Length: 92
Image (cartoon, rainbow, N blue to C red; front, side):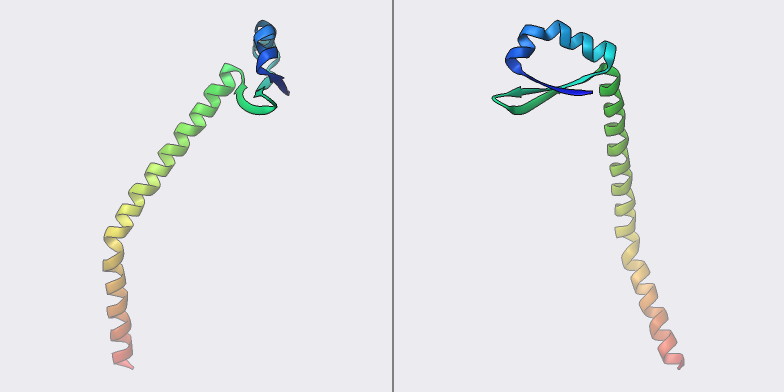
């Protein structure tokens, strides 16, 4: 369950908030002057998010590598297709 708490209240109730997060799996949004600033969540959720972020960036890097390969081979493929098309028109 996600709860909201002001930074001032968090200072007064930090121990309680830590217990709720670690034992009950609650989450907190900490606000300053009514504006959300940071979130407090359990360590296991944080690690789960870290893993997702790492997998995301690995996937991005794989796409970049594939894109570089495609940029190297694409002009050749286009030229071959153009030649084949010209040959097909010449045979007609």
